[in-house]
Each structure stands twice: as C-alpha cells, then as structure tokens.
Length: 146
Image (cartoon, rainbow, N blue to C red):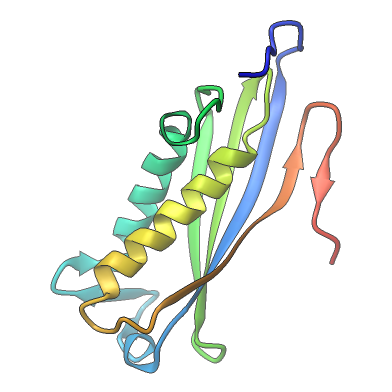
C-alpha cells in the first residue's frame, strides 16, 4: 500500500462511465426510463449495486485505500437510437487519496448488475467500455479531452 500519511486531506471527486450495448429486444422493453423484467426494475437495482460497489472498492482492489465516501451518484442514460446505455458514477470524499477507483468500480458493478438482470432477455449485451472521465483534488486534476 502507498503511504499517504503525509498528504493533506482535500476534497476529491471522480466521474467514470461504463457503456453497455442494448440488443433490440432489451431496447424494446424500455418504458419511462426503466426496463422492467421478472427480476424487477433493472436500472434501479443497478444503481443500488453501483453505490454498494463504490463503497466496497477497497475490499475488491488489492492495496486500494479504504475511503469513507461523502457522496456517490449513479445515473443511467439510455440512448435507444444508438442501442446503448451510459452508466455514470460520480463520487466525492474528503481524503488523502483520490476516488477514481471508487467511481470506476461503481460504474462496473452497475454494468455487471444490468447484465445479470437482463441476460434472461438477451445474452447479446456487451459491456464495451469503462473509463475515467474526470478527477479533481490532489496534486493534479484530470479530464478526458472532448
């Protein structure tokens, strides 16, 4: 583990996204911003799972510092025309180290939960990209060029 004892506590934020392809049969089930299946509302369950995943990041990633999160927000944005959903995870804390891993873990766990709940409809779902979009706090900020 990296020693962060001498670092100052600062506000840290991170924003990650996971992109997931939606086969046509799943996109056709989208109603009022949600997909309902026999297992229940997929988006709402994925949101809860993403928050839980972000909170447990240090238990999943070796040598990752445990952080108390001040906030974690998961937003699922469907784009039926493109046949995909974007799962955004925004995390905030006041700590000596950043929350990039928590944001990416939250987005990943939400995407995996989406897959698990939707696979009864189609196994054609693809989690095709997970990436950090932005981080603030610490030595330097980072933002994906647009």
